[in-house]
Length: 283
Image (tube, rainbow, N blue to C red; front, side, top):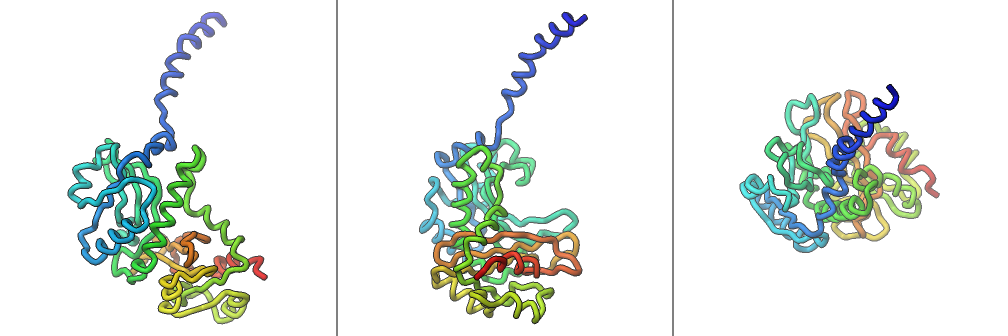
């Protein structure tokens, strides 16, 4: 009986090994990224497309690229010869409509006809509200493109890194003890009280109006982090999410990246626990 069982196992082994050989990991699927052309999909919004095109020409250096229309994307998305950088409206489960627009880098392939969600994603970065964007996305667009490129290089660096996410950048905040941090007052949630402001906003942590914070970003001020948040214009409590970022105005390095579910208690913006984490260990 044991001999028969052993023979059955030995017979099945080649079939098992053959099945295993068909498994292609994510790092193997994207290893050709720098050799393939990245199609920059224009939105049809002339104002945004002009800004995006200019920043791509100035900054994109990790792969060959070409600009294309949404119609071009629809005809080419099934080909694994192309990667696509595009703006995608994202809707979380139970949201009545898309709440956030993401800047997303995906690979073409045969599953594309089943929807964008079935395409292989390298990285997605929150860009702005899907409805009534604030306009700050235009100011932060150069930084977001640079952050995306850094993340792609990280993703390509090893098989483990291929599955990494932007949230890992939050560990960088501990290297910012000697840097200034400027929060736009509109980036703070309503849960941040006046008492908390006095508790956390000192030793190089500043509160500014939106215009002042944006001027720092536009001026590429060195050794200074600036806040940026992305949330739906009309969030659905319990379903929508808010993304919070701290970005180096000079180098465009991402130092903090967190998201939280928006509830009746926790609204959009940096929460008290974010401020506690960000300011921990400062001089």
